[in-house]
Length: 134
Image (cartoon, rainbow, N blue to C red; front, side, top):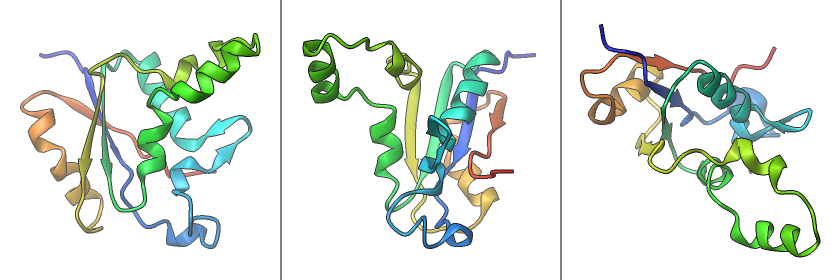
């Protein structure tokens, strides 16, 4: 049996149950204490040994991509002020460890997972639902 190396994060939904908070910000980016909801799911995946994160996104979800990208301006300013960049470590995934697929229209969870099929291939994968908050 092949090892579990990939995780699919269906994050393309509209977030209507969280309106009006999600009108301008993806529900996965809503802060819970000191980090966005999506960060908890990614941290859990990394701790479980997942090597590749596949985000199935939709319109208005660029904040998720920005969150896991390098923020050169922020890091430069922090470094110039003598602040530690360690706090940003969790948002820095290994090069090649992140892939984004666009779900053209919200057609449900099954369709979102199906949209990741070309990246998943014939390997086993996990599905992490990062939009539930209890």
